[in-house]
Length: 41
Image 1 (cartoon, helix red, strand yellow):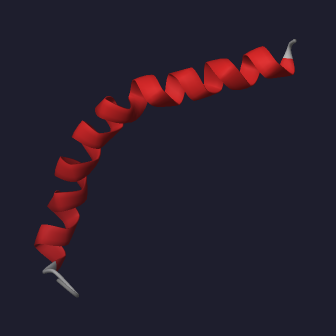
Image 2 (cartoon, rainbow, N blue to C red):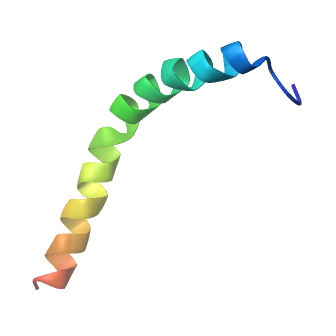
């Protein structure tokens, strides 16, 4: 899977990115929350 077609390359990241972003959003929020807690201790 070295170099996909430009078309596939353009549409694929959108399809891949959205589910991953929504799935990792709670994790990201908890990381930010923990960071703020330790900053403002």
